[in-house]
Every structure is written in C-alpha cells, then in structure tokens.
Image (cartoon, rainbow, N blue to C red; front, side):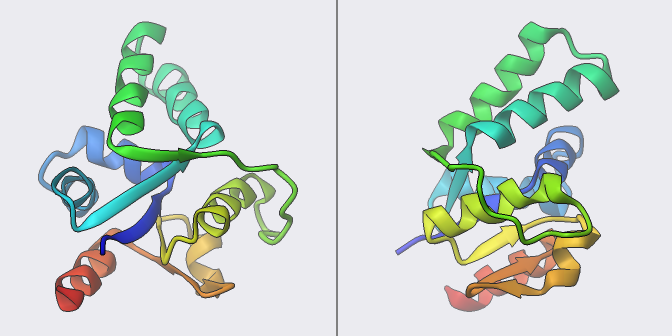
Length: 138
C-alpha cells in the first residue's frame, strides 16, 4: 500500500526547479508508486499563480506544470472550512487536503506547518525527512 502524502506548494516549486533535490525525489516516488500524491484544486491554483507571479511563467506554461502535478496525483475536493494554522491561514487548505484524503504526511518546507508537528495523525515533515521515513517503511 502506498504512503499517502500532500506536497505543499513550496515543495512542488522546488521540485520543478531542482530536479535532483529532495523535493524532486519525493515527487519521483509518487511517479513510481511507493507514494501516492494527493492534492486539491486550491493547491494547484496556488502553484500556477506562483509560477506566473514570481517566476514569470506564461499562464500556458504554468498550467502545463500544474497539469503534471495533477496527472501524478489523486485530486480531492476540500470544503475550505478547516481553521487550524493560526500563524498562516492560507496553509489551512494544505492540512484540510491531507485530512480529507486520509494522508499520513504533509511534505513541506513551510515553518508554520513544520511547527505544528502533527495534526489529527498527519505528520508535517520536510522533504529530506519524508524520504528517510519512506525508505524506512519499505
């Protein structure tokens, strides 16, 4: 059974720009099977928006990058009602996605999520730590 994980936007961006780093290796595990990537439309939208706004991608190229994430992920719907990340409410959708999907991990570099540690049995981990844990589980 694959380990279910939600990859935060910062991990998706890092994976796109550094194809050999831990974030890219995390996504590679989702492509090859030991990890099931789970995402939601708000995460894909934020990913696309950051590519356009911060990295000067054309909207078409940003949509293509988001489509790649969509293609390797299970897409779920989130109601947008969870309020648990008081330091950064924009991160609530990441936790809500993981909760709705029954994910075991949120893979992130965001300190607001890392500082939470755990929420409802979901572990908030950095990409390098996630890689270690997945390797240990296999």
